[in-house]
Image (cartoon, helix red, strand yellow):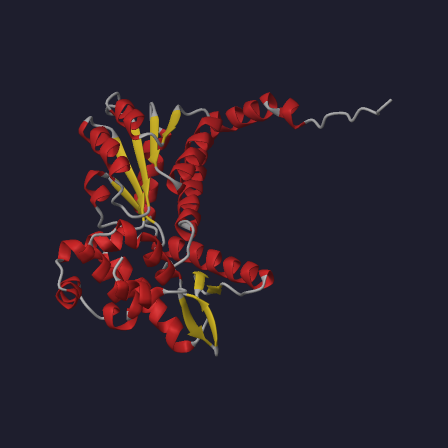
Length: 314
């Protein structure tokens, strides 16, 4: 790390309302600087020391300002945890606004690090509601209906997802299994591709990726597409790479993310809404077989819900 970088980020704090609060971007840069090249350190120093000015620059402008290349700027953005430079610019704009207004750093949405838990609950509930409303408003019901039809008639369904999207993929597969469909969720990219090779016309492959650019999800969807299966993409970026291999694209809300956001919470919420819409639609179309299957699975698991008798110590 350069001496200038050390001096800039020592303590990792910014003045907030007359006091000091932790600056998460400075802390992140300080942590990752030893693994950066000298040119990447220059980019990191620039964005953390003057986020307002850097937020106004294009990738070319920031490269010129730091005496580096556009590729170095993009690599630095990704090392700092952003999918691309566009996402870094949005985060920089938010950080600049926080410093100017004197607000505490944001954890997620407008939740500050010093918010009481009651405020956290209220703000998260409001954000989740907005995410659901935005997703419902943007969802193409014609595409949804076509995906439901394909799933209802499918010989087999494969669902792909990585990380938080992998949990949503498991949720969809489990729901479809409950109503008698043959469904598998894959979070291992090798297993996903191996399964996709076996798909054909009459099968369905569903890819869940908020960014629309997750290679480990796109690859099995591409294979399934080329094998003749009907393909569905659940994504926040309908213009992303995943869409070129999707017969049907279901768009989820793309809420803004903040510096300390631990996971894609809003994207997961919107994905689960789409999954529930798919499941409900398939259940409607296959009710004659779905209802008995649901009842049978409930009865098969009933004994696991019976509370154990507490034994009295002697």
